[in-house]
Image (cartoon, rainbow, N blue to C red; front, side):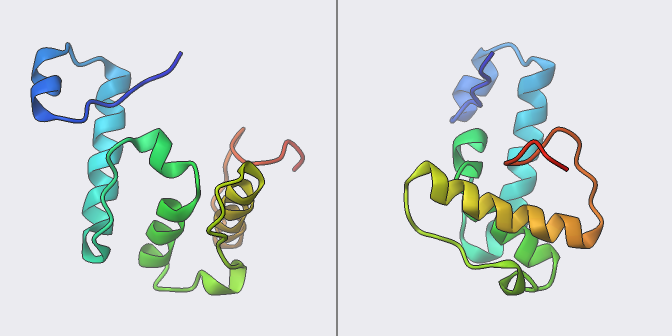
Length: 109
């Protein structure tokens, strides 16, 4: 099942708000609030999180710029490069003690 967040206020008002869609909107709005100093705007939550750049930027802001030591992001569009970017974020999470269940780019612990 795919959840698509509405891209306009009109769509939000016309469509009945499901619980999943409401959560997507809340997370998207939070991301936009955190990322506003950098001028980054999240429009499609799932699409915008795919390449790792948005998560990296959020971690950099919340972690006070300590992300460089975990790795450098790749600007490529290949899937393997996007996964490598996500791994940088997951290394940061691991170092900060954030526990994630069933989330990540690999299945091994």
